[in-house]
Image 1 (cartoon, one colour):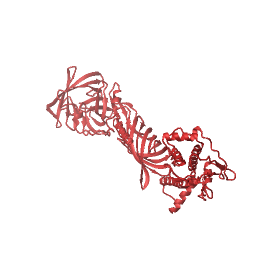
Image 2 (tube, one colour; image 1 turned 90 degrees about the vertical axis):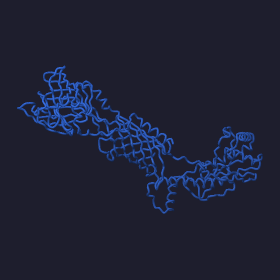
Image 3 (cartoon, rainbow over the protein chains, first blue to last red; image 1 turned 180 degrees about the vertical axis):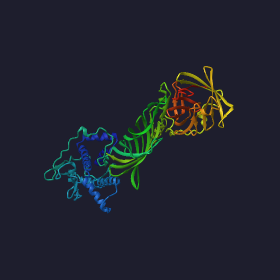
Image 4 (cartoon, rainbow over the protein chains, first blue to last red; image 1 turned 120 degrees about the vertical axis):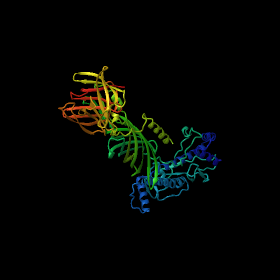
Length: 417
Length: 213
């Protein structure tokens, strides 16, 4: 009977109990103090387990210590290569996973609640983010719960013989023996959990009466298992800024090719997802521009002139980009972007392709080749001439380039934050 | 997939962004003219006419120049002598003669034999900076000037006061000391405008094309 009841309780917490069964179980919990107690024990058991898992954090000291050991094992005195960001990240994740899996789930949690628990690791506990030796698992739990290190939580043995059953949680990563077993459904005693803050003996921890908020209204919904490891969310770097210089060509051109370091552009982008970003760009570059119309008189006619010249100006662009992570000898990203914006007296539309090579965790070298079509809104020669109404013949000398292709090789540094 | 679709959409916008071509053609300096008749009067086109407004020191008048074709009795320098009939309000003024071949075009004056009064209007290759010289007495036994002609503009566009616009215009400046004459020739039209500081110029101080038939 108790076994079946406990199965229902566990299934309830795992979210695997049907609505009808959940309702029935909660009804029984509400009417039976014994069942309520059993229910509460399971609930506390899970809360404690979850708290202990969540409290495991890795300090920078531990992290660096791990890396030092890895380096020592690899007989590499130092990592001189700049592109180590991914291996380091992988190492961090691996280390976290190993600690969480083997330390917490595989061993710590079951032992912590086992009534016959022996000090399972006499040489390891968590204290203020550092590894120390000689403490018991209960101390580790207390520490994780924020209690003083010398406090101990233990369970009072039930006077019933415990089945020492093994529960399998479908959402858990390990089998664990539980000490929350009971003989029957009816003879379950309300076993108090005691705590002593002075002499490490047990004192009463009163089980609170079941309150309405303890009965979750979302019956049949997912009840997240406290034993389920929640991957810590990666601290995504949502923004990036890059400063690039460039050189290239303009077609058709009035001047020679644009020399290196001629153009500069500052880009700020937001990562919509890890590999898709949108951003703004401010450029100071050499743009081919149609000049102002000038007028002069010579030999009885009026001469109207307009030249085209390459001048330094600012432009503003908006761009979207997509990154393809690639690992070929070294990890890097292929980048493809589309952009459009305003240039002096016109607009530009373009596309570019390039690559990003990580230099550190936040810094990358960025190089890209872009092709842009720049359109000038300046008056055409025909428009200029039609607006002239002099009493003498008007001779027009004007360049009439309104659509230009800009090819640029951009290169610079990028910082993600 | 979304990115590819966006790229296609962007490309379509790029192509249809208001202009038929992605980039304008490269502007180039006008090529040197090697066939001079394209820029000169339609002397071969007998019956065609050009109407000019002529301004002299004494006033302005409208003069029509009717092409009469080759004067078969006269030949100049191995070329043909072309006759034009100059009239003013249906009143004959005089005949004026020209000669031209593929490389040169002359104004001869009122006679095919008037060698001393010939004026070398155009000479190949017709390109900016191109120069040539010629002697001109203006029909006088006592005056003989050497003029230097310089091509100063090619491929320009010119709009006349009446609104007519001519493209591919060549500007030539003829100078001899303080005496200066400027002529503008349009392709497939001929002389469209001239100004002169010489008071004895055959065409006054200003002659502007009004009409062509």
